[in-house]
Image (tube, rainbow, N blue to C red; front, top):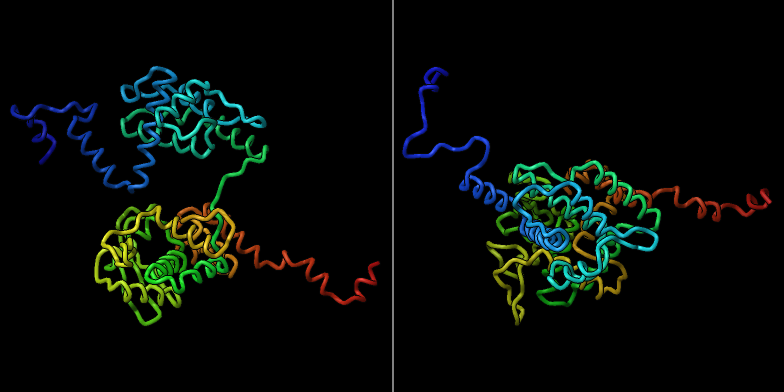
Length: 371
């Protein structure tokens, strides 16, 4: 069809013409449905929680109903000022009465300022919510961005540190695995889960619990490969296979045999009596398994699901694995994100950390010559 022919077409009388400047109700619902379907469940929950907080704060602070119009940029700046603790005394601008009302409403767990990361997350959710409505984001305002940068610097100077889960390097991992011995079917499952999540490339909790038996393929007695679908950093849905070798592959084989799994979720809840259920573990349960095993092993630290991922990267740096190979396994997209853990592991094996030990082990005569 050429341009001249297309200009002769007109909207059908039976179908109302759309407004080119805005989406109709059906298209708006379709967009929301696609966004919901493409968002991981735990991410969707965190977004919903953040938006509930915005609704409550806007209503209490301004009498503003979120949703009718874009949020003015000064309100976003006020949100940051209301919730960030100002060093050194930790004072913040949210009135006590509003703070108490937010807690009473259930929007806030406890009174007091929020962590900088939490404020950043809620501003990011607000920004995404605006983009979905086709509105400019107040989170992009220059004043707000300057405020956040300097708030981060001020908190760092005051000694406030970003909380990170303890990295589970090789020795503590082995301690956790040792607690799985003589623990029945639960121990067999937990050993396989920990071994795959760590030895299979530092998998995220959501990736571990999403694995299906059909995602596995045995190459030999000591080697499996498993396929990842859509993940946090790769939403294409293309299946990428990752290897699992040695003791980790053997732990996986033991779980498959003990649980007699043929299809369905790989890592499942256990029912009373030690029977294997049909329901997959939740992402939160991965963290609880790590924490329980750490307690049984008597290990101090702030352990969680991310300990497996950060520990894999730390240990890889410690053992001198090239960064490119590490990122091929973990599927980190940002070098900056992975580099901190990787460099920490490298430094553990660096000769630069042993200079005093080398000096102390030198000949006594050398010391005498320098007195």
